[in-house]
Image 1 (cartoon, rainbow, N blue to C red):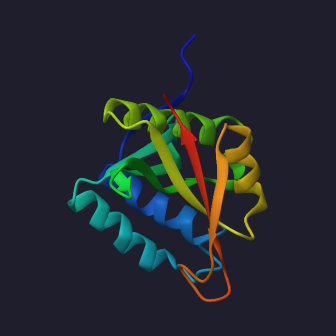
Image 2: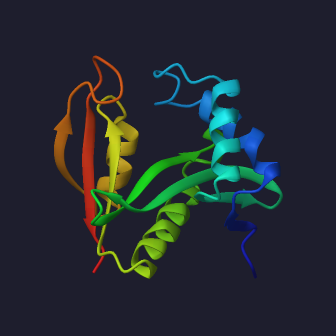
Image 3: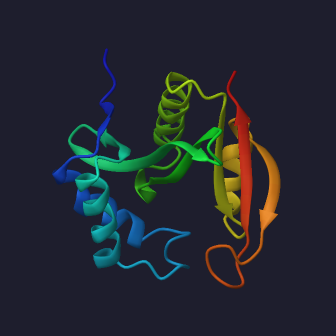
Amino acid sequence: MESPLSIVPLAERDVLPCATLMAASEPWTSYGITTEGAELLWRRALSEDAAVSVARLETRTVGFAWYIAGGGFGLSGYLKLLGVAADARGHGVGSALLRHVEGLTLADGQRDLILLVSDFNQAAQHFYLKHGYSYEGKLPDYVVPGIAELLYRKRLR
């Protein structure tokens, strides 16, 4: 039997659900992201044909992953954003999105995927460690003053 979860490219119908998810979730709430600000971000991603994949559970958008080829210092893939709706967490949505992005990274001929996690986001840190990522360093005050971003990396091949 086929799973009701699908991972597809970002489409117009996903913009508001992604913005709403972002505005209601950490770490973005700590950064002051509003639904309106997030909607502008997702509309820009759509207009620029950014490599954004969304997870849909049947017809509902429940997660997103924004990938930048070579965005990791020009040498690695970079996972810019990954988010899952609160009521869909713990059901494999984040893992499916992460596997998808890892596949994109390998298809781009890159051997590493890197990402940043806010220092207060313990759940995300645990998630990435569980998926084979290693902590590589700390960037204090990188996005906003008082919050450090933690650099994680996974060697894919």
